[in-house]
Image (cartoon, rainbow, N blue to C red; front, side, top):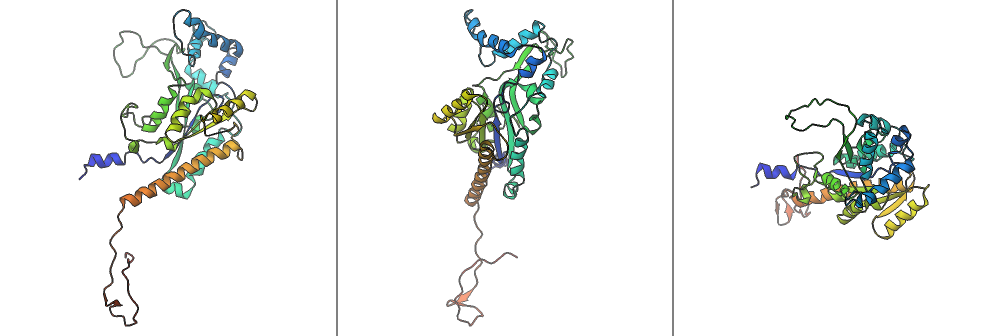
Length: 350
């Protein structure tokens, strides 16, 4: 006989979530989210990114390895220290995030995807729901300040620290650290490879229950969002590690391209030819577009498969009750002289 603990773990997660995981830059917005930051302080984007792209090579000459994906974070802090981004705070970054412009159809499309599932009677009966996640090497406060944030269930992105805890500080529940709120250190960093960690945190439920370590061993049937219930949407080669995980474990992958950039289309075509993504379309999320149709179909078909899986599981665990037998004599129903044969049948419950 199973213990209460053993029975509880079987229903810890219902696995009723369809997770749509989004890259941000050039997937939800046409360019890079740092644009309003650079414009605010009068910095030319071309010059800033030229400097950032040169950093790995310059530091390599000194024998120092620098991550290409996140070198820009340290360069932002360099601009802060040199007074170019004077007084830059997380709150200021959040305000700048409100200036981000999105591709056609956004952010309304994210709401529509959730609504389509929520208003479907069959899916509602099974408590199936859609969760949107953003997994980006960009700046988290800017994403939090953007128009899509209210439709998003979680964000993995880079964070800055403002108040620095000094050495030899006494442990406190709340520390009152004097000083300016200006960002001065990197708190959390995500690169194109560690994006896959976010996928497994969503998969295991780490983001919903912090008792669950992402490195903990958890059987597939006990994970919160199975990878087959995931749809990953991004724009290019930098997301190949994430595409690979999603494809390998049965999820769905989709790449978007920008009409204004010819190379963008060639890039996603190559991803498709190499089997990196299952399909691709223009970054147009308005109703009727190919991308709108592909994503909504992928979400709905995933929801239908969850329903089917549950129905199949029910037939495996449920044993039908025994039939009620009507007594008969020599094949003739007792009390009936019509000569009609009476067979065993199940009577309806009162």
